[in-house]
Image 1: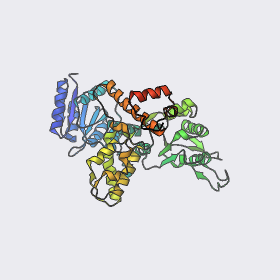
Image 2: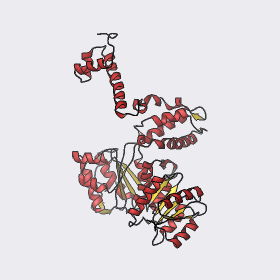
Image 3: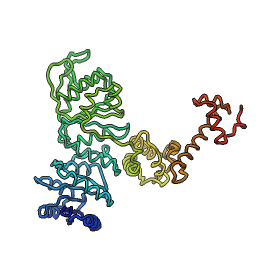
Image 4: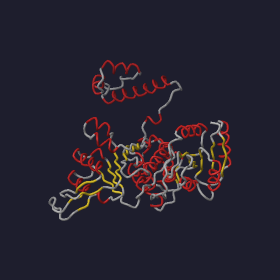
Length: 462
């Protein structure tokens, strides 16, 4: 370990000194460079085992330095660092061969875990892709600084470097951005200028969907007055995105499996073999493994699709991204509505962060859009959130009694029992038998809860 050499590349002396202190305390030999040119020179002279490199630097930035470094035959693993994470920089870093991508400020434990990870996998070569970064339009931008989204960005970059024959499977709830991930993989792939063909497997009847995918020859069926190319053919070297593939019929599943295996097909009513060069990306908000066990989705197709698997987290699992997302949507819709809205009040943001978002990012986007439309001043007030506060579930603000788990759990359970029983008694005018029957409880157990929580029934009609 003491012979392990680590180069720190950053124009911030505080970052350099912090990393030096950690590295040297752990027995590593560390040295620094303050720009990309200096870094390349020191890498040639010192031959470090590992490089920590900032993205934003004067002159040659970190991504350009990484690109030049990876053009060499032998290069050390590189951990990129940034003060602000965006999808494009994360994807670019992984495409260019970064071993890891970290967000500042860096904790000591994170630095040590990263070094351990690099050293344990040192024999694995980093990705080597020397192509320019694809750009996404404003409407296709993915936002997030959370560890979950950072991991998604890295997986996009890795997936984009795989051969087109490698399918990608995206799994996540509705509104989590599966199509955005698919488009990001496409835009960062080898053929970003070729078509991105998005097909919703639930939007068309089976017969029309088959024609839409495979195309047809003239005279194949009534109304087929000319040859029509299908999406598989039009996609060329681009990407075929099959959304909600879990709803694809069993017959079409078999035909799709053959296309994935043979990379060719024939148009409906035709005999000419058509080659498929595009990448297939499938997405579903359903659990395909469960559908396989139920016999409604082909097991062989599932394993053919599930080569690169990316699971998108629901928004409720990355709530630290809500302020970033809200600010992004606020800027977009303020421009569209020609309004000068500069932010949210603290109370408004607290409400936004407290909501559960069953519709995920798409729901947040619509909430902000409506808020901008209703806003009268320079700040978004709670009243512009269309009663969102009333929809926040009671579990978001549960009263925690104390640090003892069992006591706090019993306290919450007691609150629920009392409220539930009281509401049922009121609904059935104090008739314990009717209330118990409606709740599918025995009268004895229901009455026990009435007594336990000292619930009065004398003011109710018996």
